[in-house]
Length: 248
Image (cartoon, rainbow, N blue to C red; front, side, top):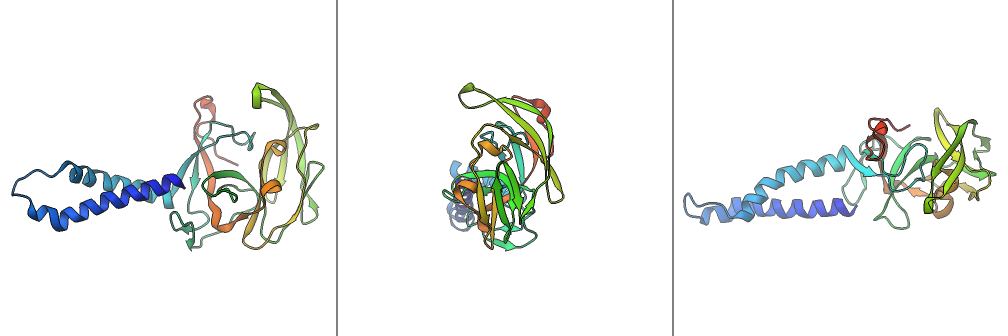
């Protein structure tokens, strides 16, 4: 959000300088006189900034994954792309929808402004839709009283905080018509939940269930906080094999 605000300010400044030069300053310069450097740079940068701003605001925006809360789907260090128009077009900065296209579906991986501090962007998986009753108990997810199907895949280990080795189990979980991977640690504390999702809100959870601060801790994601749907990993400096993977 802060970067978008910065781009908007730069866009406004360069555009204003270009406009003032076209309407006022150019008429006062001697014939054949060179443009001031500030005007020249503004005319050069304004179209580029405008195109980047429009792409980031309405089409696609890059993000970097900062933590392991979405493992094994996403790893810390993944650079991803987020579709900005899947859930409708939104006013930049204000984030209000002005063209409604669709809404998040259960199982989508989405980016949103963190409700307690909207200046921070979070990424989680959509688990609960408006009106759903969400229960997470004994490391098992229930939606509207229905236990969600999970099947064991393999033992999984990774380096966690403090360079400690974390031993978990990898499962396939079915959410609606979508199947995705989650991690469960048998002996780790897992925050439980028993909530009904209010209208215009969503219940979000990380795939690394025992290492994710999500809706179980801080509540629901309002519709106006949604940024877009994550769909593609375009870079990872530590693991080139992840480049080009779609996000399920």
